[in-house]
Length: 209
Image 1 (tube, rainbow, N blue to C red):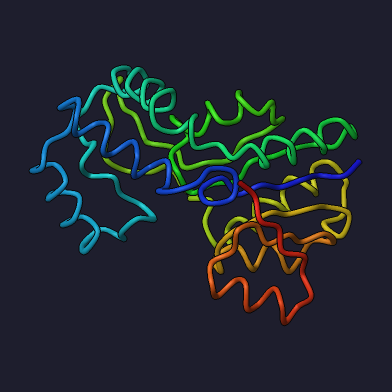
Image 2: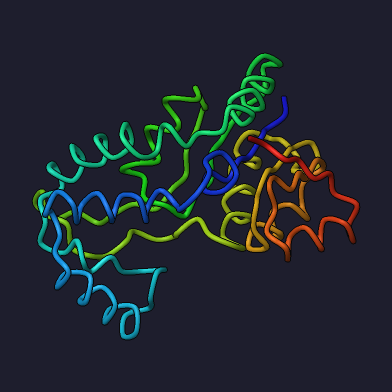
């Protein structure tokens, strides 16, 4: 059994991250306001930044966010899934391999990519909820950078699989810690920094459309 670990933003979908698309959609639907975003910006400076806070969502009903996230997925995210990415995921599924999505974007919208592509697992950023209301904080850990490697090791360990038997797909230099520790790293539509590192390391580079 092999595991194929996929980043989502920039790897499986094109353009802005799912979380940016969701923020735009929430503004359009007046679920959040420009003032909420100003509060979020203040939180970035004082409360640990993107790793711990989503203060623009504090006090909002979690159930309504779930409805709007599904709407955002259908309107803005689903059309951005790369056809080549669908084929790549399907190739692993057809071989009976375990497909797991790893993303720093919010689970409330990333879950629909998992369902769309038929992935077995998803690890994403979870919003903290208390009494049905969003607190403006994230439940740790946020799957980003080196923490993706930590989480991948945990998954592989639970299944008794060596990372040397696994694939990993990423598009940014922040994905490099994970790519460097699997047997089959793949740089997908890489940013310049990752493209340079991939050439140096001899990692295959894949261009998807």
